[in-house]
Image (cartoon, helix red, strand yellow):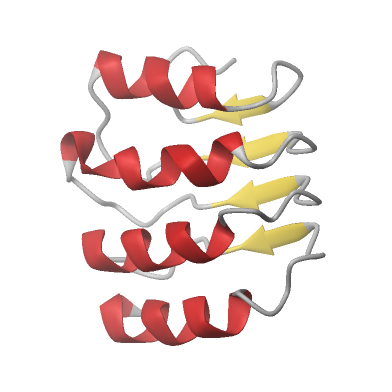
Length: 112
């Protein structure tokens, strides 16, 4: 998908606030693409499942752009980050703290 496709997707997502599930696995999201999609996901408070696996990002703590979006999803029950990218321990902790306590996260190392 790349950054351009992610930005186009983000433009469409802002009109889909009641979406409950989104699978963006295997889309070759770039760091810029993650930022665009994260902004569009913010406020999607009906989201129950978000699949971002297998995007192979190696951007370290640049994934902080996801934190506000994840924090705005109180109904999120599943977050898949397997092979999404490399996380520092600090970022893994911040992602874990941003989501609902009942959510299952895969791909953070200790899989909560």
